[in-house]
Image (cartoon, rainbow, N blue to C red; front, side, top):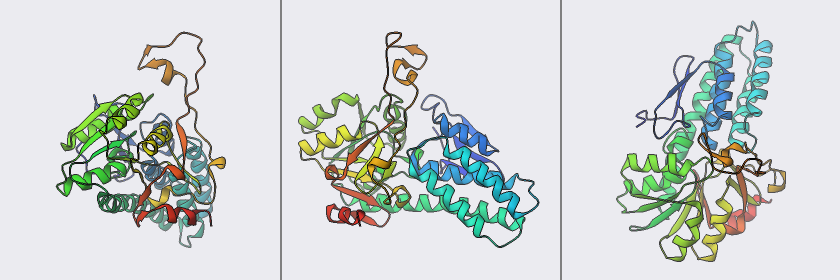
Length: 341
């Protein structure tokens, strides 16, 4: 079990995190000293989860500044811009990564001190982004727990837990907060093909915390809802736009089934996930390697030569969302109308 309080930490010019690709069978700690190392970890999904990607990107830029030999502010800003381009090319869908990069770059360009002071500022700003995410998740949990009742069974999809954030989690933060309040709840976790984040990561977190969890295949969601085994759905988000929630592939299916069965569908996400300048038509949906579908681990399970569509995310229109839980409180249907303003 991973014992650190935070999923990602800054330790004197080194970024420390857990390799999520190895869980739940092996605990491998990554110690990264360069932006390129962080970018590789993001691209290979050793680091994943929208809020965590934001913190990781910020720390990657902090590594760039910390280890730079730039003689002046202008040179350092150019190095940061080059590092930012590397990071932006890792994963296109989750907005938190881009949000954190822009925040650091804007702060650096507007900074008036010398190069050493600028480096200290960037490291401090990256740490602040991480601290803010941890605090936001705690508040999300507190607000979201109001929607959970004693005895409820909550279905969740993919992993929006502590591993997907700096600390505590978004969707699992809601579940954790309800559990900490003494509510006797249970969780149904989807396996989340093809990378199995639900089976490998969500189940891992909940078992570790002693919260009752039942793992199901993705295609069992309709069955458990039809049988009355689910009281509400809580998921995370990789991007929330004017008209939709973008999240792990399969989320839209879960939302449609929840609406058909009159089950509340809640989305838990910090404000850094909101991208209300655009609509779902503007979002780039990441497509990943066919091998993730044709193989389980190193074992091929599909016929040679078969074509594969492996989109990592889907789009859930807001009409299927009962409420969005963020660090400011709970947003309902009437609040969604303001997104379009």
